[in-house]
Image (cartoon, rainbow, N blue to C red; front, side):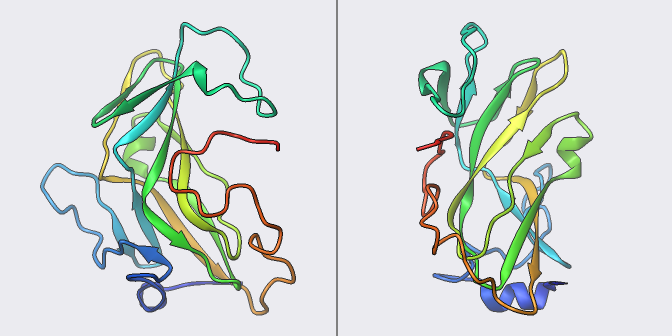
Length: 187
């Protein structure tokens, strides 16, 4: 596998390409914002302005096989405050279409990591497409803020020398073409 460069990412992105909307730069667009866009060997995706925040007053166990979204409260706008020891689900502002010969690994941005925030996203599999659902965890004993329409995580694109035999689309994966925050499902 090889890592895609900024030039290769630009060639695969744009309207109806791998990343939409695609931003060709990675500089902070406005002073005081967290950067997003293409980087030397990746892409910094942004948060949309909607969140599902875990209701800390609800003590029922979270069950990935029978997830009850009623234990989450919907928050729009921003910034979003994540309570101490809490977590929220968000989604990427960008829509991704991953080629059959590419696997994407997602890492939290260092700006948030330096505040203790953990960003958990699973790899984006070959031929998966959609808005990325992001788990944002606050392990601290104080609230943290996350900002919509700004960078939240960096994606690194790995190209295989041979396309996979079975892609996410071939498996008809349950999270294919999601546009909203998608709760876990074992269906």
